[in-house]
Image 1 (tube, rainbow, N blue to C red):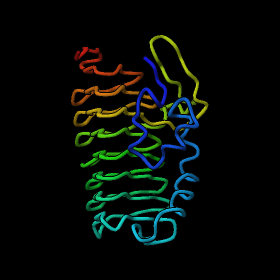
Image 2 (spheres, rainbow, N blue to C red):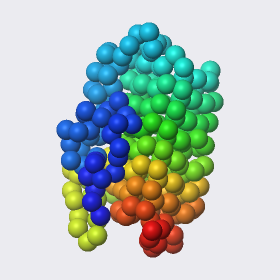
Image 3 (cartoon, rainbow, N blue to C red):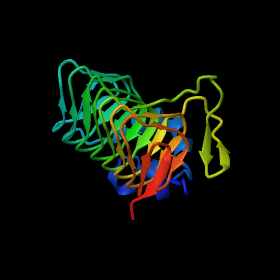
Image 4 (cartoon, one colour):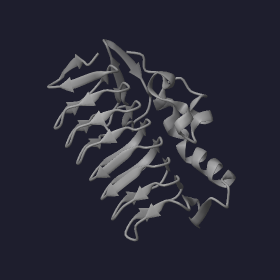
Length: 219
């Protein structure tokens, strides 16, 4: 499976487009997300975005519920919703028309436009592509149990990330079923589906269904 940023994502659907173009693989972009958000935030149109607290920029059409917590730095795009008790710890770039739902936690992430993480999700050190959707209770695990550096396992080839905290990389229009766990370094190709209550590790090809540890090609 090809794992490059261009293989996984349609870059016209994120403010991070130019930043991501400077890398080959998505995990290479994780370390710079904080600086990216600060740079982008300082350049946003003040007629469209409000800086509600230092380094927290929210589009004026976005809806943030009173009980949500927005940590710095973060950007919430146009027409997005951040619902009750959402916990954005910081370093989160949330695109347009996104849903960050009740009791969802985000940390060091890029969410492309139209991403939905609507119910009890944890998403950390991850990049979710255009129209990606995580079902209720599904999470990205971002640290190995032995605290070793994360390795991407792809068709018999291991790729060293040299990073301790790496979550998951969901291509455009990926569907993740309820209560699934995406283990550190999981990569899911565009237009793929993960069955509910799955434990996923490694790389899932594009246009596939992941069921009981096997891939079923959808096309």
